[in-house]
Image (tube, rainbow, N blue to C red):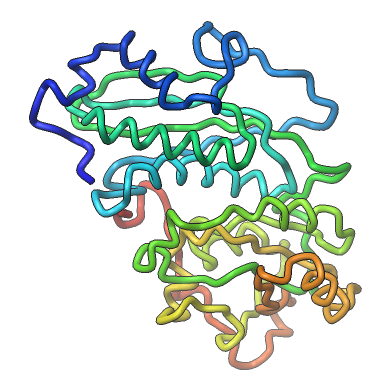
Amino acid sequence: MHPFTRHHADSVSALGEEKLIAAIRRWLGSASPRAPFGIGDDCAVLPAARGRRLITVDPVIYGRHFDDTVPPRAVGAKLLKRNLSDLAAMGGRPTAAVLALTLDAGVSRKWLEQFYRGLAACARHYRVPIVGGDIAQADGIIAASLTLVGTASGRRIVTRTGARAGDWIYVTGRLGGSLRSGHHYRFTPRLAEGAWLARQTGVRAMMDLSDGLAKDLRALTPPGALPALLPGSLPLRPGGTVAAALGDGEDYELVFALAARTDPTGFERAWRRAFPRTRLTQIGRFVSPGNSPPGIVNLTKFHGYEHLKGSRRS
């Protein structure tokens, strides 16, 4: 669905800011509580948290993260799920979100209503109240940026640092072909899996896969080591390739380092008991440069997605 309209009566400009905000309240419904715990005040009031706070922000931009082939309800859901995936990567759980909307006056009201209804449905599913936001006008643009607040689900927060040479490398789900398959907006953030992994003492470091395994894995690699991946080990989507798994991005799966001292067989058995429907694959391990096994993937040939440098995303 195209987000712009040529007919003034069907556009957001026919409403104006105040009526549009009133409409957004209706569209969000129970996903947004009343002020000051929801939309309507200068700031939202958040309840006190017992655990450590986590905060992340991610946008969706027309022509970059979605196009006319993506239903507007799915765009709204993707906005929240992108942020939930970041939270999952640190073993967190969501508590509240705020949304900044930037849009052209010619954006279709029907498109925007479906966007917010998709966001609201996703927020109710994951129990995330939308507690505030802002609207700004910009010619030729439709973009939404969501800031998500969360807390640690347990005593431990897992970061990207902490892996060591010898550690095993694991990924959840399947990789590659995210845009072609539509996975980039149909994915399920691994919140439960991330919280479980954060409770496992053998999990040293973790992150979500959004820019392609080749790029994201570099952030997880310990100093003085390199990731040794075997081509046949990568869990590919149907029709996918190793190149797609390494460079496409927007997989929104978890990649993590498991301590070398941990028994992989026992760990995988425990995973299957906890998550029988979520695939887990050991794809290699971190090694010293002089100890690389033969036949590993040459990651220098792949880059992944880099903002301000990469190609356009749809």
